[in-house]
Image (cartoon, rainbow, N blue to C red; front, top):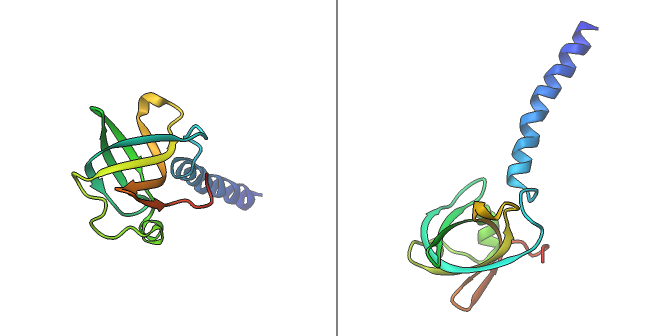
Length: 122
C-alpha cells in the first residue's frame, strides 16, 4: 500500500509540471480567432521551444511566437530572414488577454513572400 501511494504521488508530481508546459506552448492561451499585424522587427530570439520576435506595430511592442527551428525551415525561412529592421506581416492567434500584445504566428509575410508555419490551421 505504501509503495502504491508513493508511486501515485510521484506520478502526480511529474504530471503537473508537464501539463503547465503544454498549456504555455500550445494554443490554449489564444483566442481561437486570427489577427493581422504589420510592423518592424525589433528583437529576434530563434530556437526551441519556439522563436520569439518583438515587433513594433504602430508604436506598440507586440510579441510574436514563431515556429520551432524545424517548422520555420519547413515553411521556407532561411537564416537571416527574420532579422532586426525587417518589415513583417504576421497572421495568427492573439492572446485571449489582448493587453498581453502577444500572437502565435500561423503565417508570416516578408515582402510578398508567404511563409506558412502551421498549414493545418486556418
